[in-house]
Image (tube, rainbow, N blue to C red; front, side, top):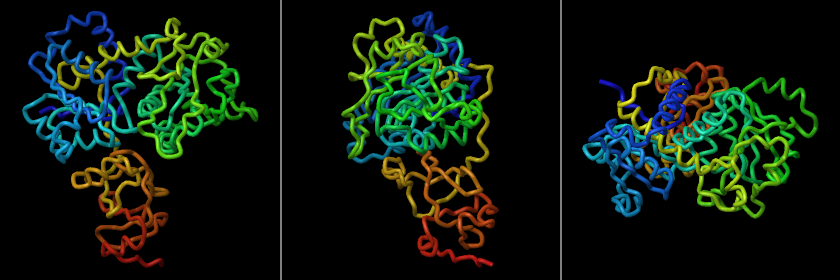
Length: 443
């Protein structure tokens, strides 16, 4: 029996699989009406706990163009969720006989991961809070690949609200995997969060270097731009002056709107950046393509809509063939020569004491009864862990061993030697004592 494949993160696909999907998406895009015999009789269910236009409609269009059917719950507030039904129960029901695949959008980070643990059919993450949006990332990468013919070594500017945009986070991880360089130009106060920068550094070898973006004029005013590269960042830093590494070429600009639905008290968009011809006509940007995941507000001037470099409407249209390829793959109707990624051995599930994830928007807070409070080990020296659902780092005060029932300092030699399946992580000594653990001898 084949293992069910889910698409919770873009990391669920290998680089070679992604490139092969692009080739197949190009075939689908050349004749959108020519593949209706691919998935006859199969049904996808759209479970959207948040509003959506492009993502939902492109998935439903893709499924119908493959010859399948669609069930739509586009406003889950009017579903049984309004009666208090849990996400796992909804997924159990829908994946029983209703549908062959679930496309899920949810406001809580880690919701797609939780859904995949209870579903008997593939789950596709269509956006979970400000965490990830893998299919939008694949659409964006596909557009870059079609326009630039390659991804490695591209210079890509990420601009706007980088803190709360799940699209930006997924895109940054994917660009790093493919060896592209990122110029992070955030609107003031909306910079890339620390956990994203930490993951870029630890998993992809990316280090931030200050960037000199004065040539980009309006887009970079008032922003502390950062250059992120997987290509020997320490050597690059040797060539930066007090103003930072000069950005002399841009291949693509990826603009985002302010994600005000996720903003918190104190966040401001009073000085949000706006992109117009003045910036796009500067020397580094002359050959750059302009992208945006949509919807937009006024962060891109209407005057750029007819500019041949502006691809955001083409980008949206390309969401259909790339999602056709994704659906066909997960439904077992598209076979790839490339191998899937190997399971990450170091991402070990461990038990956590009565200590929920510190991210208040994590699914563990709203579905605590169903989540297993699993955490991934990020490193053993020093011992660090991240929430297995939303990927944010968790605080560790002391470390317990389930066999000895002793607890130790997190930076102790003993703590580093405890087997992952015996680890218990506690916020502090008081919590460990309350759970019946005793302090180990310091000798």
